Length: 316
Image (cartoon, helix red, strand yellow):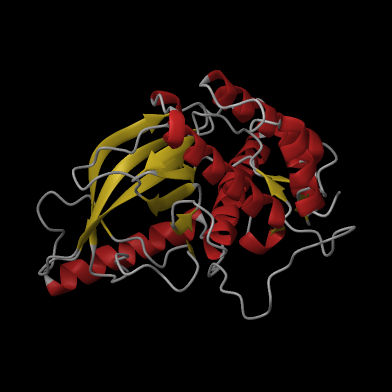
């Protein structure tokens, strides 16, 4: 599936559609490399390395994959290393999940002190993939080729691979759009096939930021996180989106800031017939968590927040 075959947005919304201006920064799209093309590129790199006698530095696992796929939005963060001479070091798993695993990667530029940590989210191979809830989320997303639509509907091997890439594309596009409007999400560095490289939310030693579910915030801290959550959900709704699977397990608290993660199932509230249902479920799930931690009843009004978000999405 090429990037331009996946259309997440409708041409227009029924009401209140919020669109990017023509000069709004967007992710750079280069299309999907076939396995043959990837192999050829890898061989070309290997030949070039042999020709100049410049093997990978000791301990490195690969040369930087920057430029092989879709690139994150501009302006890019200062910490991002984009030189082709950079190398990646695999530091181990951060999280395992049903659909994807997250690994810690250190990208460094040899001969300099420039280094950064990245989270590599890799959707699992076809044999292990468990997209058991995909049908409802995929409503409202369009593929232009009837062959691909049939493959997805019948869940052939090809169709399941397309679904995996749809998840990756949906997450990358959503993160790019949200980061551009200032929403609290990790910067999406690049997407190559079903691998996403993301800003690592954690410390310099590689310890990941805690999930909200791991914390026991009380008093002012609890209220502050609630206000941050409301702002994040409004940012999503302003783009006509809902998280689709929101809970205290896919919210991180990084340097006192609440961060949204795990957005492959992001839902277009208008285009998806079940969009309002997904949005309402998100709000009720997370409101229940905050209420259980002592958030005052007058603040944790799920129905009021749902109505506000639907209005923000142009459905109120």
